[in-house]
Length: 208
Image 1 (cartoon, rainbow, N blue to C red):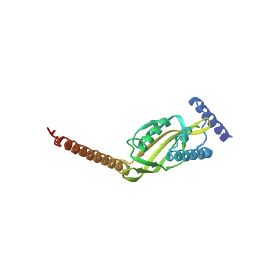
Image 2: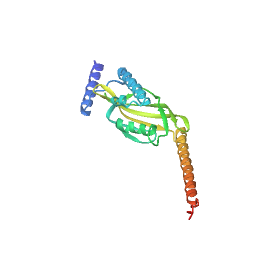
Image 3: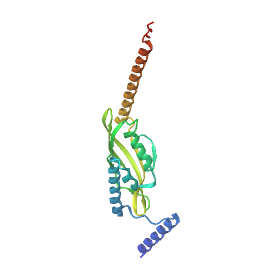
C-alpha cells in the first residue's frame, strides 16, 4: 500500500512539474523507435539530395529557420544560401571543385529534448574532387538539431567541423591558391614582355 502511494505521489509530482514548466511529459528515450527510423530516413534523404545537388529535394527536409555552418566556417541561412554556396564552389567563375560527396553517420541515437526536438552528432567521410589537384578525402565531425513540424521531422541546423592541424583539403585549397598565383604571375610576365616588345619596336620611317 505504501508503495502504491509513493508511485501515485511521484506521478503527481511529475505531472505538476510538467505543468509548471509549461510542457507535456516527453516520451521515454527508449520508446521512440518510430522517430529514430524517421530520422534515419531523413538523414539518408538529405545526404542523397546534397550529393546530387538537388536543392529542390532538400528544401522540404528543412525548417523555415534552418542554418548550416559549413566546414569552411560560413553560416548559411536557408536552402537558397546553401545552394548559392555550392554553386559558387562548383560552377562559379572562381570554382575550384568538380564535386563534393559526403557520407554522414551518427555516433549514437538522437537524444530527444522534450517531444519534438532532438540533438544528434557523428562523423562523415567526405570526398572533394578539385579541378586542378585531384581528389582529397577527409574525416569530418558534424552535429545537428532536428525538430518535428506538423508531425514530420525536419532539420533545424547542421554544424560541420574538420581537423585544422591535419587537413588534406585545406592543403589542397592552399595549393590551388598557389597554382592560381603562379598562373597570374606568368600571365603578367607574358603581358609585360609583349608590352615591352611593342614599345621597343622601331617605328617605320616614311619614304619621301
